[in-house]
Length: 276
Length: 252
Image (tube, rainbow over all chains, first blue to last red; front, side, top):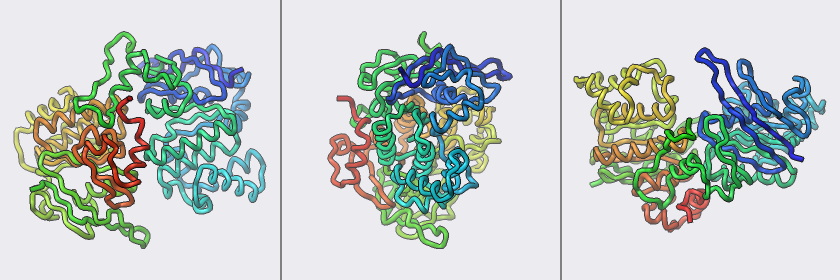
Protein backbone atom coordinates (compact mmCIF):
# COMPACT_ATOMS: atom_id res chain seq x y z
CA UNK A 1 0.00 0.00 0.00
CA UNK A 2 1.23 3.48 -0.75
CA UNK A 3 2.38 5.81 1.98
CA UNK A 4 0.43 8.79 0.76
CA UNK A 5 -2.50 8.83 -1.60
CA UNK A 6 -3.92 12.09 -2.91
CA UNK A 7 -6.99 12.17 -5.11
CA UNK A 8 -8.35 15.30 -6.74
CA UNK A 9 -6.81 17.77 -4.29
CA UNK A 10 -8.05 21.34 -4.58
CA UNK A 11 -6.85 24.39 -2.67
CA UNK A 12 -8.75 27.64 -3.10
CA UNK A 13 -8.73 31.08 -1.56
CA UNK A 14 -11.69 33.44 -1.28
CA UNK A 15 -10.23 36.85 -1.94
CA UNK A 16 -11.74 40.25 -2.57
CA UNK A 17 -11.01 39.78 -6.24
CA UNK A 18 -12.96 36.49 -6.28
CA UNK A 19 -12.09 32.84 -5.91
CA UNK A 20 -8.43 31.98 -6.56
CA UNK A 21 -7.76 28.32 -7.20
CA UNK A 22 -4.14 27.59 -6.30
CA UNK A 23 -4.40 23.82 -6.77
CA UNK A 24 -6.97 22.40 -9.17
CA UNK A 25 -7.42 18.67 -8.94
CA UNK A 26 -4.03 17.12 -8.22
CA UNK A 27 -3.80 13.34 -7.75
CA UNK A 28 -0.77 11.19 -7.00
CA UNK A 29 0.39 8.21 -4.99
CA UNK A 30 3.65 8.06 -3.12
CA UNK A 31 5.50 5.01 -1.88
CA UNK A 32 8.83 5.02 -0.11
CA UNK A 33 10.46 6.84 -2.99
CA UNK A 34 11.58 10.25 -4.16
CA UNK A 35 8.85 12.18 -5.92
CA UNK A 36 9.68 15.51 -7.49
CA UNK A 37 7.15 18.29 -8.03
CA UNK A 38 8.34 20.94 -10.49
CA UNK A 39 6.78 24.11 -11.78
CA UNK A 40 7.31 27.84 -11.92
CA UNK A 41 6.36 30.24 -9.17
CA UNK A 42 2.61 30.30 -8.73
CA UNK A 43 2.10 26.82 -10.15
CA UNK A 44 0.75 25.51 -6.83
CA UNK A 45 3.59 23.17 -5.94
CA UNK A 46 4.19 24.63 -2.48
CA UNK A 47 0.44 24.71 -1.79
CA UNK A 48 0.23 21.02 -2.67
CA UNK A 49 2.94 20.28 -0.12
CA UNK A 50 1.32 22.39 2.57
CA UNK A 51 -2.12 20.92 1.91
CA UNK A 52 -0.81 17.45 2.76
CA UNK A 53 0.01 18.78 6.24
CA UNK A 54 -3.22 20.80 6.29
CA UNK A 55 -1.11 23.89 6.86
CA UNK A 56 -3.31 26.30 4.95
CA UNK A 57 -5.00 29.00 6.94
CA UNK A 58 -8.45 30.40 6.26
CA UNK A 59 -9.58 31.93 3.95
CA UNK A 60 -7.74 29.11 2.18
CA UNK A 61 -9.76 25.90 1.76
CA UNK A 62 -8.56 22.37 1.15
CA UNK A 63 -10.83 19.91 -0.60
CA UNK A 64 -10.04 16.42 -1.83
CA UNK A 65 -11.84 13.24 -2.81
CA UNK A 66 -9.35 11.44 -0.63
CA UNK A 67 -6.18 12.34 1.23
CA UNK A 68 -4.82 9.22 2.88
CA UNK A 69 -1.56 8.96 4.79
CA UNK A 70 -0.62 5.44 5.87
CA UNK A 71 -4.31 4.49 5.89
CA UNK A 72 -5.40 7.51 7.92
CA UNK A 73 -7.79 10.01 6.40
CA UNK A 74 -6.21 13.46 6.69
CA UNK A 75 -9.38 15.25 5.61
CA UNK A 76 -11.39 14.09 8.60
CA UNK A 77 -8.58 13.99 11.16
CA UNK A 78 -9.06 16.33 14.12
CA UNK A 79 -6.60 19.15 14.77
CA UNK A 80 -5.24 17.07 17.64
CA UNK A 81 -4.62 14.08 15.40
CA UNK A 82 -2.97 16.32 12.81
CA UNK A 83 -0.62 17.70 15.44
CA UNK A 84 0.44 14.17 16.30
CA UNK A 85 1.24 13.58 12.62
CA UNK A 86 3.11 16.81 11.91
CA UNK A 87 6.71 16.32 12.89
CA UNK A 88 6.92 12.69 14.02
CA UNK A 89 5.27 11.21 10.91
CA UNK A 90 5.27 13.92 8.22
CA UNK A 91 7.84 16.70 8.28
CA UNK A 92 8.31 19.65 5.98
CA UNK A 93 11.48 21.59 5.24
CA UNK A 94 10.35 25.11 4.41
CA UNK A 95 11.71 27.17 1.60
CA UNK A 96 13.79 29.89 3.17
CA UNK A 97 15.79 29.37 6.36
CA UNK A 98 15.86 33.15 6.84
CA UNK A 99 12.11 33.27 7.34
CA UNK A 100 11.40 29.85 8.78
CA UNK A 101 13.76 29.84 11.76
CA UNK A 102 12.94 31.96 14.79
CA UNK A 103 15.30 34.94 14.52
CA UNK A 104 15.48 35.65 18.26
CA UNK A 105 16.10 32.07 19.43
CA UNK A 106 19.44 30.31 19.32
CA UNK A 107 19.57 27.44 16.86
CA UNK A 108 20.22 24.97 19.68
CA UNK A 109 17.14 26.08 21.61
CA UNK A 110 15.01 25.63 18.50
CA UNK A 111 16.41 22.17 17.88
CA UNK A 112 15.79 20.84 21.39
CA UNK A 113 12.40 22.51 21.83
CA UNK A 114 10.50 19.65 20.23
CA UNK A 115 12.50 16.99 22.03
CA UNK A 116 11.90 18.60 25.40
CA UNK A 117 8.22 19.34 24.84
CA UNK A 118 7.06 16.37 22.83
CA UNK A 119 9.38 13.61 23.90
CA UNK A 120 9.86 14.87 27.49
CA UNK A 121 13.60 14.36 27.17
CA UNK A 122 16.10 15.57 29.74
CA UNK A 123 18.20 18.60 28.85
CA UNK A 124 21.31 16.48 28.42
CA UNK A 125 19.70 13.87 26.18
CA UNK A 126 18.00 16.47 24.03
CA UNK A 127 21.29 18.33 23.61
CA UNK A 128 23.12 15.18 22.58
CA UNK A 129 20.42 14.24 20.12
CA UNK A 130 20.46 17.72 18.57
CA UNK A 131 24.24 17.55 18.17
CA UNK A 132 23.94 14.15 16.52
CA UNK A 133 21.30 15.54 14.13
CA UNK A 134 23.58 18.41 13.12
CA UNK A 135 26.42 15.99 12.55
CA UNK A 136 24.15 13.87 10.37
CA UNK A 137 23.76 16.81 7.97
CA UNK A 138 27.56 17.32 7.82
CA UNK A 139 27.83 20.39 10.03
CA UNK A 140 31.42 20.36 11.17
CA UNK A 141 31.29 22.32 14.43
CA UNK A 142 27.82 21.57 15.84
CA UNK A 143 28.58 23.07 19.27
CA UNK A 144 29.18 26.49 17.72
CA UNK A 145 26.08 26.24 15.52
CA UNK A 146 23.95 25.35 18.56
CA UNK A 147 24.99 28.62 20.21
CA UNK A 148 24.47 30.75 17.08
CA UNK A 149 21.45 32.78 16.07
CA UNK A 150 20.00 32.13 12.61
CA UNK A 151 21.37 35.39 11.14
CA UNK A 152 24.90 34.26 12.03
CA UNK A 153 24.61 31.26 9.73
CA UNK A 154 25.12 31.23 5.98
CA UNK A 155 22.26 30.17 3.72
CA UNK A 156 23.67 26.69 3.30
CA UNK A 157 24.13 26.20 7.05
CA UNK A 158 20.61 27.47 7.77
CA UNK A 159 19.18 25.10 5.22
CA UNK A 160 21.03 22.18 6.80
CA UNK A 161 19.83 23.20 10.26
CA UNK A 162 16.25 23.09 8.94
CA UNK A 163 16.79 19.63 7.51
CA UNK A 164 18.38 18.43 10.77
CA UNK A 165 15.44 19.79 12.75
CA UNK A 166 12.91 18.00 10.57
CA UNK A 167 14.77 14.71 10.71
CA UNK A 168 15.12 14.51 14.50
CA UNK A 169 11.73 12.79 15.03
CA UNK A 170 12.52 10.34 12.22
CA UNK A 171 9.48 11.01 9.98
CA UNK A 172 8.07 8.56 7.46
CA UNK A 173 7.49 11.28 4.92
CA UNK A 174 9.59 14.38 4.31
CA UNK A 175 8.26 17.24 2.22
CA UNK A 176 11.18 19.42 1.12
CA UNK A 177 10.17 22.73 -0.40
CA UNK A 178 13.04 24.11 -2.51
CA UNK A 179 15.59 22.80 0.01
CA UNK A 180 18.54 23.70 -2.18
CA UNK A 181 17.51 26.76 -4.17
CA UNK A 182 19.42 29.13 -1.87
CA UNK A 183 22.59 27.07 -2.12
CA UNK A 184 25.67 27.02 -4.33
CA UNK A 185 26.02 24.13 -6.74
CA UNK A 186 28.73 22.47 -4.70
CA UNK A 187 26.81 22.72 -1.38
CA UNK A 188 23.66 21.71 -3.22
CA UNK A 189 25.28 18.42 -4.17
CA UNK A 190 26.13 17.78 -0.49
CA UNK A 191 22.59 18.48 0.75
CA UNK A 192 21.13 16.23 -1.95
CA UNK A 193 23.50 13.45 -0.96
CA UNK A 194 22.31 13.79 2.66
CA UNK A 195 18.65 13.56 1.62
CA UNK A 196 19.38 10.68 -0.70
CA UNK A 197 21.15 8.78 2.02
CA UNK A 198 18.22 9.28 4.39
CA UNK A 199 15.72 7.97 1.86
CA UNK A 200 17.85 4.88 1.34
CA UNK A 201 18.80 4.11 4.94
CA UNK A 202 15.61 5.09 6.73
CA UNK A 203 13.18 4.06 4.01
CA UNK A 204 11.63 7.48 4.09
CA UNK A 205 9.25 8.85 1.47
CA UNK A 206 10.31 12.18 -0.01
CA UNK A 207 8.39 14.87 -1.84
CA UNK A 208 10.93 17.20 -3.41
CA UNK A 209 9.49 20.52 -4.52
CA UNK A 210 11.64 22.58 -6.87
CA UNK A 211 11.58 24.90 -9.86
CA UNK A 212 14.73 23.31 -11.23
CA UNK A 213 13.68 20.66 -13.71
CA UNK A 214 17.12 19.24 -14.37
CA UNK A 215 18.01 18.97 -10.71
CA UNK A 216 14.79 17.07 -10.02
CA UNK A 217 15.38 14.80 -12.98
CA UNK A 218 18.80 13.87 -11.66
CA UNK A 219 17.71 13.35 -8.08
CA UNK A 220 14.17 11.92 -8.05
CA UNK A 221 12.56 8.69 -9.19
CA UNK A 222 9.40 10.24 -10.53
CA UNK A 223 8.44 13.79 -11.52
CA UNK A 224 5.13 15.67 -11.52
CA UNK A 225 5.17 18.82 -13.63
CA UNK A 226 2.66 21.42 -12.47
CA UNK A 227 1.30 24.45 -14.26
CA UNK A 228 -1.35 26.79 -12.89
CA UNK A 229 -2.49 24.36 -10.21
CA UNK A 230 -2.73 21.29 -12.44
CA UNK A 231 -0.41 18.37 -13.07
CA UNK A 232 0.29 18.65 -16.78
CA UNK A 233 2.60 15.66 -16.98
CA UNK A 234 3.79 12.81 -14.80
CA UNK A 235 6.80 10.81 -15.86
CA UNK A 236 9.75 8.76 -14.67
CA UNK A 237 12.74 11.02 -14.10
CA UNK A 238 14.90 9.13 -16.57
CA UNK A 239 12.37 9.81 -19.34
CA UNK A 240 12.36 13.54 -18.78
CA UNK A 241 14.28 14.28 -21.95
CA UNK A 242 11.52 12.51 -23.87
CA UNK A 243 8.82 14.65 -22.26
CA UNK A 244 5.71 14.93 -24.42
CA UNK A 245 3.94 17.92 -22.96
CA UNK A 246 4.80 21.27 -24.59
CA UNK A 247 5.11 22.96 -21.19
CA UNK A 248 7.68 20.45 -19.94
CA UNK A 249 9.57 20.72 -23.21
CA UNK A 250 9.42 24.50 -23.00
CA UNK A 251 10.83 24.49 -19.48
CA UNK A 252 13.68 22.24 -20.59
CA UNK A 253 14.52 24.24 -23.68
CA UNK A 254 14.59 27.68 -22.10
CA UNK A 255 17.60 26.82 -19.93
CA UNK A 256 20.96 27.93 -21.30
CA UNK A 257 23.45 25.11 -21.69
CA UNK A 258 27.21 25.03 -21.54
CA UNK A 259 28.47 24.86 -25.10
CA UNK A 260 25.04 25.66 -26.48
CA UNK A 261 24.48 27.98 -29.42
CA UNK A 262 24.51 31.75 -28.90
CA UNK A 263 21.10 32.36 -30.42
CA UNK A 264 18.26 33.76 -28.28
CA UNK A 265 16.84 31.21 -25.86
CA UNK A 266 13.39 29.94 -26.77
CA UNK A 267 10.70 31.40 -24.53
CA UNK A 268 7.58 29.66 -23.31
CA UNK A 269 4.50 29.89 -25.44
CA UNK A 270 1.69 30.48 -23.00
CA UNK A 271 -1.03 30.91 -25.55
CA UNK A 272 -1.66 27.24 -26.39
CA UNK A 273 -4.78 25.32 -25.28
CA UNK A 274 -3.07 23.65 -22.33
CA UNK A 275 -2.17 27.00 -20.79
CA UNK A 276 -5.72 28.15 -20.21
CA UNK B 1 43.42 49.25 -24.63
CA UNK B 2 41.02 47.56 -22.29
CA UNK B 3 37.99 49.48 -21.10
CA UNK B 4 37.96 48.08 -17.59
CA UNK B 5 41.30 47.27 -16.01
CA UNK B 6 41.62 45.89 -12.50
CA UNK B 7 45.14 45.42 -11.09
CA UNK B 8 45.76 43.41 -7.94
CA UNK B 9 42.54 44.57 -6.33
CA UNK B 10 42.10 43.84 -2.64
CA UNK B 11 39.04 44.58 -0.54
CA UNK B 12 39.18 44.24 3.24
CA UNK B 13 36.27 44.64 5.65
CA UNK B 14 36.44 44.98 9.39
CA UNK B 15 33.96 42.66 11.05
CA UNK B 16 33.69 42.29 14.82
CA UNK B 17 37.24 43.50 15.24
CA UNK B 18 38.90 41.13 12.80
CA UNK B 19 39.75 41.70 9.19
CA UNK B 20 37.95 39.86 6.43
CA UNK B 21 39.75 39.73 3.10
CA UNK B 22 36.83 39.62 0.72
CA UNK B 23 38.93 40.07 -2.42
CA UNK B 24 42.61 39.18 -2.57
CA UNK B 25 44.88 40.40 -5.35
CA UNK B 26 42.50 39.94 -8.28
CA UNK B 27 43.43 41.28 -11.70
CA UNK B 28 41.32 41.29 -14.82
CA UNK B 29 40.74 43.35 -17.93
CA UNK B 30 37.68 43.69 -20.08
CA UNK B 31 37.85 45.08 -23.62
CA UNK B 32 35.24 47.49 -24.95
CA UNK B 33 32.05 45.72 -26.05
CA UNK B 34 33.23 42.47 -24.49
CA UNK B 35 31.16 40.41 -22.07
CA UNK B 36 33.14 39.13 -19.12
CA UNK B 37 31.88 36.73 -16.46
CA UNK B 38 32.79 36.18 -12.82
CA UNK B 39 31.75 32.83 -11.37
CA UNK B 40 32.17 31.18 -7.98
CA UNK B 41 30.22 30.15 -4.90
CA UNK B 42 28.77 32.59 -2.40
CA UNK B 43 31.45 34.33 -0.39
CA UNK B 44 34.00 34.06 -3.20
CA UNK B 45 34.13 37.83 -3.58
CA UNK B 46 32.66 38.06 -7.07
CA UNK B 47 29.93 40.55 -6.17
CA UNK B 48 32.39 42.52 -4.04
CA UNK B 49 34.45 43.29 -7.15
CA UNK B 50 31.40 44.87 -8.80
CA UNK B 51 30.64 46.79 -5.65
CA UNK B 52 34.22 48.00 -5.44
CA UNK B 53 33.99 49.36 -8.99
CA UNK B 54 30.88 51.33 -7.95
CA UNK B 55 32.49 52.59 -4.77
CA UNK B 56 30.21 50.47 -2.57
CA UNK B 57 33.10 48.49 -1.06
CA UNK B 58 36.34 49.80 0.44
CA UNK B 59 39.38 49.26 -1.78
CA UNK B 60 42.41 48.43 0.35
CA UNK B 61 44.91 47.74 -2.39
CA UNK B 62 45.37 47.78 -6.14
CA UNK B 63 43.71 49.97 -8.72
CA UNK B 64 40.63 50.06 -10.92
CA UNK B 65 40.84 51.95 -14.21
CA UNK B 66 37.96 52.72 -16.52
CA UNK B 67 39.12 53.74 -20.00
CA UNK B 68 42.64 54.31 -18.71
CA UNK B 69 41.61 56.65 -15.89
CA UNK B 70 42.01 55.63 -12.27
CA UNK B 71 38.67 55.76 -10.50
CA UNK B 72 38.15 59.02 -8.69
CA UNK B 73 35.77 58.70 -5.78
CA UNK B 74 34.57 62.26 -6.29
CA UNK B 75 33.61 61.78 -9.92
CA UNK B 76 30.06 60.83 -8.99
CA UNK B 77 28.03 62.07 -11.93
CA UNK B 78 30.65 61.49 -14.59
CA UNK B 79 31.06 57.93 -13.35
CA UNK B 80 27.32 57.25 -13.37
CA UNK B 81 27.10 58.24 -17.02
CA UNK B 82 29.68 55.59 -17.93
CA UNK B 83 28.97 52.74 -15.53
CA UNK B 84 25.68 51.41 -14.18
CA UNK B 85 24.76 48.33 -12.14
CA UNK B 86 21.83 45.91 -12.11
CA UNK B 87 21.37 44.18 -8.77
CA UNK B 88 20.45 40.61 -7.95
CA UNK B 89 17.12 40.93 -6.23
CA UNK B 90 14.49 42.88 -8.16
CA UNK B 91 12.31 42.78 -5.04
CA UNK B 92 14.85 44.77 -3.05
CA UNK B 93 16.52 47.05 -5.57
CA UNK B 94 13.55 49.23 -6.58
CA UNK B 95 12.13 51.85 -4.23
CA UNK B 96 8.82 50.38 -3.03
CA UNK B 97 7.08 53.75 -2.77
CA UNK B 98 8.25 55.25 -6.05
CA UNK B 99 6.34 54.63 -9.26
CA UNK B 100 8.20 53.19 -12.22
CA UNK B 101 8.01 56.64 -13.78
CA UNK B 102 9.75 58.25 -10.82
CA UNK B 103 12.41 55.51 -10.67
CA UNK B 104 13.21 55.97 -14.35
CA UNK B 105 13.11 59.77 -14.44
CA UNK B 106 15.25 60.35 -11.36
CA UNK B 107 18.61 59.84 -13.12
CA UNK B 108 17.47 62.27 -15.83
CA UNK B 109 16.57 64.90 -13.24
CA UNK B 110 19.89 64.51 -11.42
CA UNK B 111 21.87 64.92 -14.60
CA UNK B 112 19.73 67.75 -15.90
CA UNK B 113 18.67 65.89 -19.01
CA UNK B 114 15.38 67.13 -20.40
CA UNK B 115 12.86 65.37 -22.61
CA UNK B 116 11.91 63.15 -19.67
CA UNK B 117 8.55 62.08 -21.01
CA UNK B 118 9.79 60.68 -24.30
CA UNK B 119 12.87 59.08 -22.73
CA UNK B 120 10.86 57.20 -20.13
CA UNK B 121 8.48 55.92 -22.79
CA UNK B 122 11.36 54.82 -24.97
CA UNK B 123 13.05 53.08 -22.04
CA UNK B 124 9.88 51.07 -21.39
CA UNK B 125 9.65 50.14 -25.06
CA UNK B 126 13.31 49.09 -25.12
CA UNK B 127 12.92 46.57 -22.33
CA UNK B 128 9.60 45.29 -23.65
CA UNK B 129 7.28 46.65 -20.98
CA UNK B 130 3.85 48.04 -21.89
CA UNK B 131 3.65 51.83 -21.64
CA UNK B 132 0.75 51.69 -19.23
CA UNK B 133 3.11 50.24 -16.59
CA UNK B 134 4.59 53.70 -16.22
CA UNK B 135 2.59 54.75 -13.20
CA UNK B 136 2.57 51.44 -11.40
CA UNK B 137 4.46 50.62 -8.23
CA UNK B 138 7.02 47.79 -8.01
CA UNK B 139 4.66 45.60 -5.96
CA UNK B 140 2.24 45.58 -8.87
CA UNK B 141 4.80 43.91 -11.12
CA UNK B 142 6.12 40.35 -11.30
CA UNK B 143 9.78 39.52 -10.61
CA UNK B 144 10.70 39.44 -14.29
CA UNK B 145 8.94 42.75 -14.98
CA UNK B 146 10.76 44.35 -12.05
CA UNK B 147 14.11 43.19 -13.34
CA UNK B 148 13.20 44.77 -16.69
CA UNK B 149 12.54 48.03 -14.86
CA UNK B 150 15.92 47.72 -13.10
CA UNK B 151 17.62 47.21 -16.49
CA UNK B 152 15.72 50.17 -17.97
CA UNK B 153 16.81 52.32 -15.03
CA UNK B 154 20.44 51.34 -15.49
CA UNK B 155 20.24 52.29 -19.17
CA UNK B 156 18.57 55.69 -18.69
CA UNK B 157 21.89 57.57 -18.83
CA UNK B 158 23.09 55.48 -21.79
CA UNK B 159 26.21 54.09 -20.07
CA UNK B 160 28.95 52.11 -21.84
CA UNK B 161 29.40 49.59 -19.06
CA UNK B 162 26.77 47.52 -17.33
CA UNK B 163 27.69 45.65 -14.16
CA UNK B 164 25.30 42.73 -13.70
CA UNK B 165 25.14 41.09 -10.28
CA UNK B 166 23.28 37.79 -10.68
CA UNK B 167 20.55 39.49 -12.71
CA UNK B 168 18.45 36.35 -13.18
CA UNK B 169 19.05 34.16 -10.15
CA UNK B 170 15.78 35.25 -8.49
CA UNK B 171 13.73 34.47 -11.61
CA UNK B 172 11.94 31.41 -13.00
CA UNK B 173 13.61 29.51 -15.82
CA UNK B 174 11.39 30.86 -18.59
CA UNK B 175 11.62 34.42 -17.25
CA UNK B 176 15.39 34.01 -16.97
CA UNK B 177 15.49 33.10 -20.66
CA UNK B 178 13.53 36.24 -21.58
CA UNK B 179 15.76 38.45 -19.43
CA UNK B 180 18.99 36.99 -20.85
CA UNK B 181 17.64 37.47 -24.38
CA UNK B 182 16.81 41.08 -23.53
CA UNK B 183 20.31 41.73 -22.18
CA UNK B 184 21.93 40.18 -25.24
CA UNK B 185 19.74 42.22 -27.59
CA UNK B 186 20.54 45.47 -25.76
CA UNK B 187 24.25 44.68 -25.79
CA UNK B 188 24.20 44.10 -29.53
CA UNK B 189 22.11 47.22 -30.23
CA UNK B 190 24.05 49.60 -28.04
CA UNK B 191 27.53 48.11 -28.01
CA UNK B 192 27.52 47.70 -24.25
CA UNK B 193 30.30 46.17 -22.20
CA UNK B 194 29.12 43.63 -19.63
CA UNK B 195 30.79 42.55 -16.42
CA UNK B 196 28.49 39.84 -15.15
CA UNK B 197 28.46 37.84 -11.92
CA UNK B 198 26.67 34.51 -11.64
CA UNK B 199 26.96 31.23 -9.81
CA UNK B 200 25.43 29.43 -12.78
CA UNK B 201 28.08 28.34 -15.27
CA UNK B 202 25.50 27.75 -17.98
CA UNK B 203 24.24 31.33 -17.74
CA UNK B 204 27.80 32.67 -17.86
CA UNK B 205 28.59 30.44 -20.81
CA UNK B 206 25.55 31.71 -22.68
CA UNK B 207 26.32 35.37 -21.99
CA UNK B 208 30.08 35.80 -21.74
CA UNK B 209 33.15 35.54 -23.95
CA UNK B 210 35.56 35.01 -21.09
CA UNK B 211 35.07 33.96 -17.49
CA UNK B 212 37.11 34.23 -14.31
CA UNK B 213 36.57 31.50 -11.71
CA UNK B 214 36.92 32.73 -8.13
CA UNK B 215 37.19 31.03 -4.74
CA UNK B 216 37.65 32.50 -1.25
CA UNK B 217 38.27 35.96 -2.67
CA UNK B 218 41.06 34.96 -5.03
CA UNK B 219 41.13 34.39 -8.75
CA UNK B 220 41.48 30.70 -9.56
CA UNK B 221 41.48 30.46 -13.32
CA UNK B 222 40.49 32.42 -16.38
CA UNK B 223 38.76 30.53 -19.16
CA UNK B 224 37.58 31.40 -22.62
CA UNK B 225 34.21 30.19 -23.76
CA UNK B 226 35.73 27.41 -25.86
CA UNK B 227 37.86 26.19 -22.98
CA UNK B 228 34.77 26.07 -20.77
CA UNK B 229 32.69 24.16 -23.29
CA UNK B 230 35.58 21.78 -23.95
CA UNK B 231 36.15 21.20 -20.20
CA UNK B 232 39.76 22.33 -20.60
CA UNK B 233 40.26 23.73 -17.12
CA UNK B 234 43.56 23.38 -15.35
CA UNK B 235 42.65 23.80 -11.68
CA UNK B 236 40.79 21.29 -9.54
CA UNK B 237 38.36 23.87 -8.23
CA UNK B 238 37.22 25.01 -11.67
CA UNK B 239 36.85 21.36 -12.60
CA UNK B 240 34.71 20.56 -9.56
CA UNK B 241 32.50 23.56 -10.30
CA UNK B 242 32.15 22.33 -13.85
CA UNK B 243 31.35 18.79 -12.70
CA UNK B 244 28.63 20.07 -10.36
CA UNK B 245 27.03 21.81 -13.34
CA UNK B 246 27.25 18.73 -15.53
CA UNK B 247 23.48 18.55 -15.96
CA UNK B 248 23.66 21.97 -17.58
CA UNK B 249 25.60 20.55 -20.51
CA UNK B 250 24.19 20.27 -23.96
CA UNK B 251 22.28 16.99 -24.03
CA UNK B 252 24.20 14.09 -25.45
